[in-house]
Image (cartoon, rainbow, N blue to C red; front, side, top):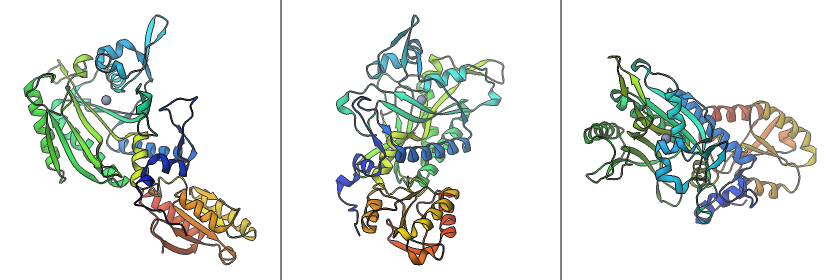
Length: 415
Ligand SMILES: [Zn+2]
């Protein structure tokens, strides 16, 4: 038996783990910072996207779609051109216009809001999109999945009345914290970034004070550690960051609920109030999974590739001991696939070698069918993460995996 050394730091580099699992690859002709998702990586991403969509729907979001391109004028109006044009890809002249790849999805969502008139009665509206955005990062700073030039973001923009701010922040934060519990990510603390007396903060001081007080109340009642960071707010609004530790113990903020006083002004976004007059709407940026690339890298590292079973590219690696069990193994593959289990059949080579390969691929479970199992519709299953071994009916195993995946449990309980 080969044991994976969990403590070796190099084993926690998502690039190494990704290589062993076949998660992503790069090619010089495609370009730096533009990773290709291989089939195993695509499974992880598909499951994350599915999860993000479910959470977004459950917290009242409506799916929208928007193009990755927009006129340079859109980003001049949003303020991105002035602040971030260095990090944007150069404009493409098309039919008298200049088109750019978007550096953020907010302006498109602002335009979706602006496409219809909104009454105070129908607010809040929450638009969710799994949306690619682009950063022209220097080649030297690019790395694996964690620093890339196309970021696929689970992105939500909430448009609400000022009196709805607190409820919206509660909804956003609770959805995030619940999702992190499912993903097995421990929250270190919540960080509330506020303004200070320095220059450059946009909007009325009163508006800030009130918004910060609401955020403070929400953060304080979550029962988690929290800290206030004066002066750390973005120029356009205060925010709450969810701080976590990566596999190396380094702190990073993995999700944010960000208020925005700026874009509603710039795009003149309003709603019709009870008084029949137009009022400025409040905008909140939030997501659940955030960047698909970064979340995949983060999870690969904290789990050393041994992802929760619902995210595992291979949920069961099936190994017939000898050629005589090949037919039984084929039947087992059919039964398990019909139950929705991601099974990989490895019929050839020495059993020890196949087990070792499966372990370095971080397959969730390893199932062996020898002569005695084949005669009884049974399988002997090992969970390399827990060391538990069990022999059970194939149909029972299919059921256990299906149940664990349906509940998004960390692992299948054997034995
Ligand atoms: Zn945004």
